[in-house]
Length: 219
View 1 (cartoon, rainbow, N blue to C red):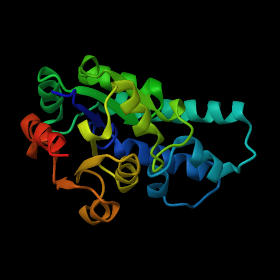
View 2: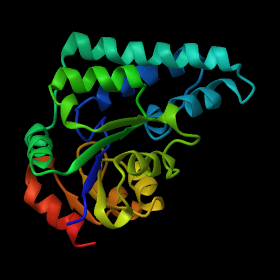
View 3: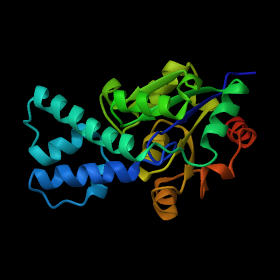
View 4: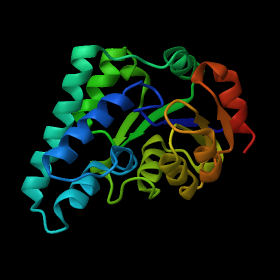
């Protein structure tokens, strides 16, 4: 039997952290004198957001400093209020791992935040790889991060699938040739449908490891 892989988005899919990052971007948007809707910033990569705020000529050193600052702000909010996984997610991840499915994370979060979040939830050891925007040339909705995750897992599109919570993430996975289970945790069912999700569930606990494996194997 071919090796199966499953790739998870992190924020909004595994962990209920979207509100923290929405607040963080709202603070930064106001600081830099913009009146943009923070929802737009949740759909783009961190560095793209700062280019929107400050222009394309922003120096690389300043960009890295700002990205690190944004990550610290989000992490501080999680430290103060706690990190909570969506109901059913830790059990799903543990069961998939126990059944031999290779797992990866594909996230727009900064690596330090992603690793810290997974450690706080006690699930880091279940993942073979954690891929972040800094590892690829283009963030979601480009397919790069999912292509890199598949490469690291050593699986192909015929034996791999994705769990996402946003239209941007769904589009990235579909562009990589992957099928997607979308969860209605932070974005609307309509947005996920329009992005092309193959299956939509209201919350992660509606789906178990056996169903995920059958979903992957039906490709």
